[in-house]
Length: 328
Image 1 (cartoon, rainbow, N blue to C red):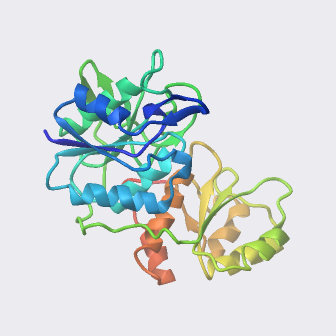
Image 2 (tube, rainbow, N blue to C red; image 1 turned 180 degrees about the vertical axis):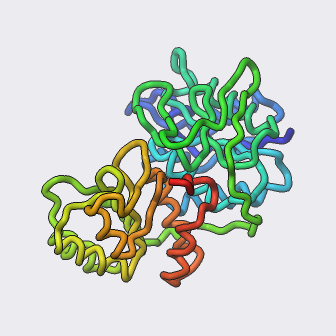
């Protein structure tokens, strides 16, 4: 099996320096090629802290994979953990139908640190990519494989940093191999590279008690937006505020407004409570059980496919890469 590693940056390749941990060009690439002579490593320059990742970088990673799809049987993306969930979700939309494994991983500790999780995570990712057992974007961390658009970083300290609250894992490491589950996956025809729109005006808005509807009207409605992920209470509820309802209705006429629950697990069910019926009537889109990270990445992807608002609404509602459970 021919495996290509895209090393974008992150903690796993850092070494101590005068100002603290910092990436060292060439270090991890040389280490990986010595340990895994069968793989090819594409090292990014400059190496990126994941906090600096942008939608343009999602396109860059996807393009590098698509251009090499005929040469390699699988891909591993090494990435910082803080924004790994956004990148994995975006890749699942951009590369849907590619037919090759794309395994994203990182580490909580540098490669050379005592008891580092980096060597194990990289070995697991290479093993899964080379197994030929899946053809989608996955995230591997602490011996567990997750669907790429279903993960969230849940812990900033423990090695088991990621979880998939609304979707069972794709599998778990078992000895030297993987015990994999069979999870339904949409199989869209591969249409080549369908990139996100880096310049899309997408925002994430979390409701909280005391939230000011007048602020929403004065702030978000001044400049035109492409999409808003509205993180609501429980199963998709908002305050019974006439001013808030009017502001959301106006916003939904000019942009995609997505109802995404603040809860770590569970799904939006607009109309279940009277306090969410106003969103349904306003034309707000249902994120079902999507993560906020996946909802944001999908908005960037949808905006890259068309300028027509009706078409964007239709695209967002389609289950492209297993990002939500259509039964919810």
